[in-house]
Image (cartoon, rainbow, N blue to C red; front, side, top):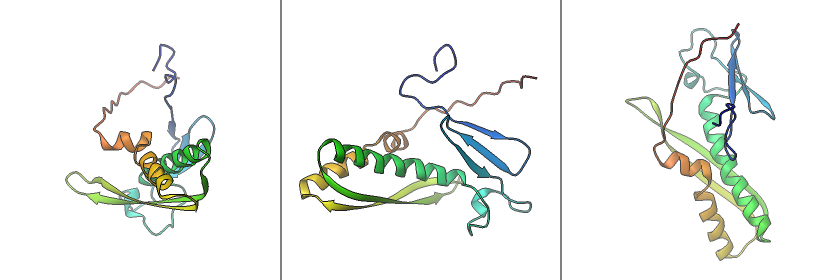
Length: 152
């Protein structure tokens, strides 16, 4: 962050708010996404897997971030290099781990369609494997949590 508290160029800032209801609002600056708190009697969002709760679970946002990064980087690379990439679909599945309970891995399957040579497909595979979010998740990162008093 710079002196004004804004993200540095190339950085992102997301604000997540909770206002006492069973919802979380995730504000990216350009859009707001609705997350949720599970209904009474459910210990955590990971306990709700039947789609009965509205909104997006935090783990789904993580998977969505990685998938968006992979698909977006492939699309940009293909466009900038004149590839005939007609469509791309990225399916991501979390692999849970324990002690502590967490997402221990992510399985990613990429489906691409278009008139692409084997060399072009190989280039897109490299681009997909090296997107910013993927690189961030592959290496330990610093996470710093601080609390500030609420301003009246």
